[in-house]
Length: 90
Image: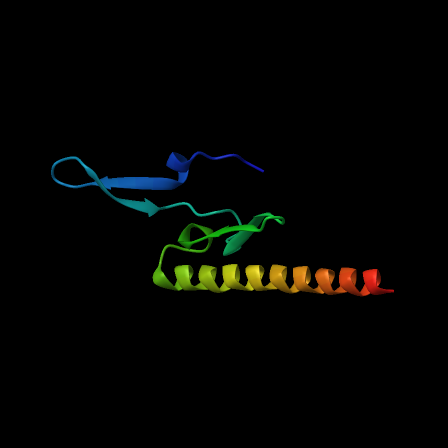
């Protein structure tokens, strides 16, 4: 896996005074997964248009994928809690 700095993937646009005003992703995350789970416990999921493509559709696609990953984690956590409670009662 290649390691990139933020500046390798983002262009900073400046206004007339030279102040940074807009950052634009021009080279997204490899494979365009929409979201990436960085850690399981606690759950850490990252996403955004840099993980798909730089349009509103990409942001929405990423948001759905993030929500799905969080829901999946909560369901798995709930299932394991129920199993642990059942085993402790027997």
